[in-house]
Amino acid sequence: MTFEQKKGFKKKSMKSTNILLTTIIVLLFNTAYSQTTGECSVYFMYSPLQSTTTYLVDTDGVVFHTWDCSASPASTAHLLPDGSIIRPYRVSTPSMMGGATGGGMQRIDWNGNVLWDYTWSDPNHQQHHECIPIDQGNGNYNVLIISWERKSNAEAIQAGRQNVNGEMWPLEIIEIEPQGSNGGNVVWEWHAWDHLCQDVDSTKDNFYIDCSSHPELIDVNIGTLPSGGPFGGSGDWIHANGIDYSPELDQIVFSSHKLHEIYVIDHSTTINESASHSGGNSGMGGDILYRWGNPQNYGAGTATDQILYVVHGANFIDPGFPGEGNIMMFNNGNRNGTQNDYSSVEEITAPLNGYTYTLPYNQSQHWMYSNGGTFYSNHLSGSFRLKNGNTLATEGTSGRISEIDTNGNIVFQYTHQGGGSNMAKAVPYEKEYEGILGLTTVISNHKEQVFHIYPNPANHFVQLSTEQEGELKIIDFLGNEVYVESFKKSSRINIQNLPSGIYSIQLQTTEHLYNKPLIIQ
Image (cartoon, rainbow, N blue to C red; front, side, top):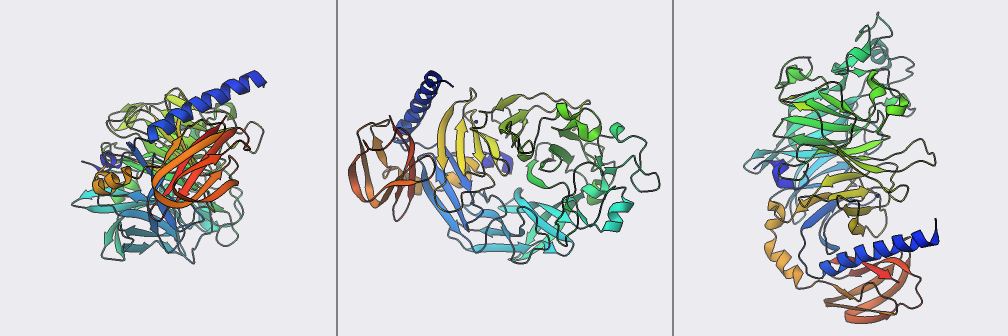
């Protein structure tokens, strides 16, 4: 079984307002009721960016396990079948101070012991955002990372970049084979710098008569070069932020914040082939196999054809899951801060033909979810298909995680409580996943300790019961604590003075943090 198969990965009027509220109440009531059974089908993992803790949470809203680490994360950790996690973290002195700067990677076991700790950060290279495991068999995993690589001002000009005043830090993708407790070998690499075109200056590198005839290459003159960077130069150009690997195709998909696109490349190449325009299963070397979301980048449309506005977390839908092989992404919808900003989850069926893709690049969506401005995160975030056909979406700037059905109904919702709710995304794991199945005893014990809330919805009183003791809080939709008490196994709370709306009931025990929805009518 491949890693992708295992991982289980991988938004008026008073009358209309009342109808909407009633719908939300019914949906959340059904969720709350089902949660009392303790039959969790999905677990999810996330790492708040302002914290050093990684959380594994179930759909009872219970913080099932945590890993306390020594440094803040660059992105989300990934759970392995043995209960260990692969986690990117921020080193103390990174060479590039861009968004989601990392530089370090760790493998940490269930009990918090660091099994492997490796650094990819020097004056010319800087890991950032994701690092994902690739199954090598026998419990061994290579790590695929996103990295910046430094290009001088002179190199940028020679590559054909116009209007550059400082350094450029384009994308490189590196595959590392862990060695010992802190070593690693680079076994595969890909560099965007090897796959450029420009049609402005024939005296410079990468010149083609017309870049629109070469969508397999990245026009070095698209996108903005922000000030900043490591030495006050041009800095981060592509800003890749999410990466995934398909073992069935031996291909990689990644998303670009700055260029508003997702890209697919061939991983079956040798290192030399990945720097060329031939070789691998595709016969195209390291050239772009497929791109989607912003066709004006390669002369195939105008601004009105753009679909992605900042994009995060591109991933392949797993084999055996509804939509398998399709590509899913979180479209932040950050349209330059206009009143029309809103996020969406996009699922596309790429026009695959063997190991290549049919031109022209199809701009139609297979499935899309949005709920206007009520579903919005201007950066961060992610989305994954679940085995039941629903989708787990994370609004990263608020720390809100939602399970959404195919009709756009929210069937489960969880918001991280506590300081620093920003997170890259939550990654789901089905109950059949080996890393979850290995915890059968722990899960069984947990089911006997489920936190019960009834009635829900409620309007006068709410009864709470569990076999545990701890601190109880009721938190409103804005994150304010409106009720706090010391809880001892059972309690009847008067809620008549609380306004109608959606609340969260949080119970912190010595072993778990319970977090469940409460509807006050």
